[in-house]
Every structure is written in structure tokens, then in C-alpha cells.
Length: 249
Ligand code: URA
Image 1 (cartoon, protein in one colour):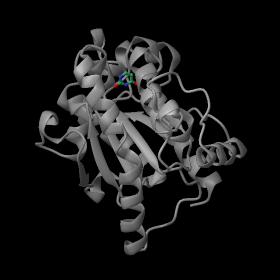
Image 2 (image 1 turned 180 degrees about the horizontal axis):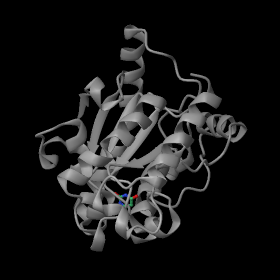
Image 3 (image 1 turned 30 degrees about the vertical axis):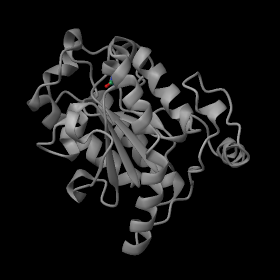
């Protein structure tokens, strides 16, 4: 698939999400939240479902949980526009309640199709509902920070999945927040491992490659991402700067 085809396919899915009436969640939505990011990325983050900020703006993870997600990405030298961010359900559950199984099932084809188009090397799940889509039956307290291969039926046929706690949970619990930073620090190594598996399986090489170099202590501090500081991340930043910037899907 060419970059133009990939972008077009993601836009098509986003248009369908915006018009979807397959479950009751469409009744209360202001805007659907299909997901956004770099169509050529190697890494997809999957959250649970939009909250009130996301519902208003039609963009994922733009509230406090999103701020923490961005700080965690910054700790490994990445920015949110370097990855793709999606959710298990694309419309806000009322009162921010948990999504119900029939709502997750109704929305699942959208995430599956997004993953087929993106063909990521790594799927990072944020929270138990997202984890459940890739590791059915697993308990997040037991498996966070660990990886598993992904069932090709999920759409991510050549990916490893890494499970993390949801950033909103981490915001309420400093010990969990520390574990989230530790788990995020594993993502570059998981990406390297997944690239090797993909190459061995003959899967398509990515057109955009993410930096996996360790980030210096200064830039690893959990603070707002400003600019990568190591030579390799700066080079990658330049490369990203040359690519199409933040894309809304
Ligand atoms: N929480 C999620 O799971 N997804 C969002 O997009 C925002 C908050």
C-alpha cells in the first residue's frame, strides 16, 4: 500500500466512524473520535474510549490523560504525532462509564480495519478494555509491561502487543504512574524485537522508522515534550519533520 493509499483508507474509515449508528453510543456523541497520527507509523496506541474533551474535539487523548500519555512518549523521545492513537470505542460512553461488550463488539471492525491499513509492528494497549481486545482473559495487574504476539484476526497481523495501565488510572495513583513510565521505556526494545520478527516473516518494511535509541536522562524526565535532545532522536525528528505532520483521522 502506498502512503497515499494508506491515508485514503484511513480517511475512509474515519468518515464511516463519523456516520456510524451501529450502537447506542452514537446517540450521545458530539463528535466521533476515529483516531489520529502518522499513517506511516510503526506503533499504534489503543485506549478505551473518548472522554468529554475528546468528544468535543473529535480527537483522542487530548485531556489530562492525554497530557500524561504525551509525557510518557516524551520519555522515550517520541511525540504523539510520531505514532497513531486510537480507541476501542470511537464514541464517548455517557458519564465516562466503561464501554459495554456489545458496544466494543459493534466498534471492533473499525479498529481492525485501521490496524490492517497501518500494519503496525507494535500495538501498545492502554487499560484493560484495550488489552482485552488483544489478550483475552489476561489480567492487567499481571501482564502490564509484558508483550504477546497478536492474533492476526485483530488486524495487526505482524505485531507484538505491549500492555500498559490506562493513563487516567495512573493520574490517580503515583505508583502506577511510575510503572507506566517503566513500561513505556520498554516500547523501543519491543519495536526492535518486532522488526526482527517481521523481517524473518517477510512482512513489509515500514516507510517511516521510529528512533529506538535510548533517550538521555535529561529528556527522559517526565516533563512536557519539547524537543528530542540526542543526536539520533534529533535526526529522527528531522525525518519526521519532513513527513506530513499531524493528521486527523
Ligand atoms: N481515554 C481514552 O481511553 N481515550 C481517549 O481518547 C481519551 C481518554
